[in-house]
Length: 155
Length: 293
Image 1 (cartoon, rainbow over the protein chains, first blue to last red):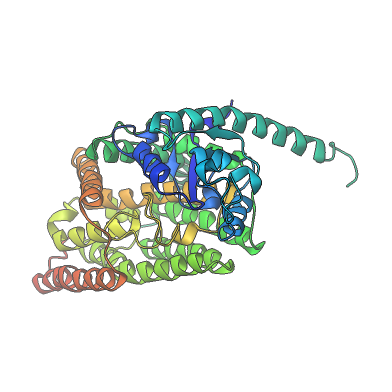
Image 2: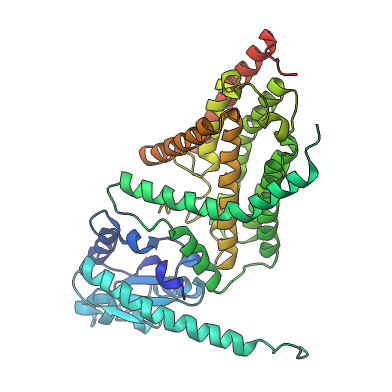
């Protein structure tokens, strides 16, 4: 039994997005879609979050902040790249100042394409991420068990 | 009168065991009602329990080791305050333990290096400064009616406390808004998605530490609503109705008010304590309505 899937808290980072996908993320929090039904809360604090929602094709200005946000999240955590810019760089892929997608900076677990990604597909992406989150939690629990000395063993 | 020792211990144990369950349930109903007020469906009523159990499944990244100690002290002193209260202890001691627990939370926030955490800690201190006079006046008012600071005596007073202390009751409801972290006074941290200071005092707490803070908050809920009970202790039915009504009012205020600046919070809390509280006490003193033997 896990509670991680019942209360996934998200943090949203805009890595030079045009705000199209950001508006759609916020739309998912409005009464029409109301993701709090599933326990999803937009925390605004990476240390409280389980899921990182990223939009935009990363550029040199926000590469380090993005890495910082990712590093501050406690394990287990998943990253969702939202919008075509975040998944591959989109139409900006060839630009001189763009690194082309979130996965050029941090590991991404779920890709949600679209320009802009629709709230339905964002919610679908989050639900997919919950499965991955659960797998990661199991791995973490096994690792913790393996790391701990057995009862009676000298430390 | 010193309360029956075993009875007192039993009440304290019941509080320690049941308060988290009751507090979490209150928080869940709170979120559901809030969602309905905003035209949303809202999370399941048991959502706060899922949240806290999840937090204990996460890794615990601490910024400084001292944080763990401060968080533990926060929850321990909150439990001590509530247990003293429900075992019929001295109201002043309860308030001291209650304040001390919040000081530990502030110290925990100051122990980290994040400026957001420091802003949250400062605001938490301002909140303590704002509500403390009114809380103490509440205890003093109850003393003036019953001639005792012991909760066991206050609760067995045959007179309806609310009729003697209407001003203090209204003042207490207003500082309750600060204590329950509701708008317009949710300055240091909030349950809503206000993000201007990230998450205030809880910014640098994560995983199990954050879960512990949440559990302490549930203990706090039950204690604070228990104080409302004292005002209506002569009739339990009215007391329960009053607690439900007061809590609903807090949710309504939370959903209809914008957050204020700290200056206005401090001023309004003190003006209310100074007018409603002190005038209430003055009238009591003047009329010598200290009737109960």
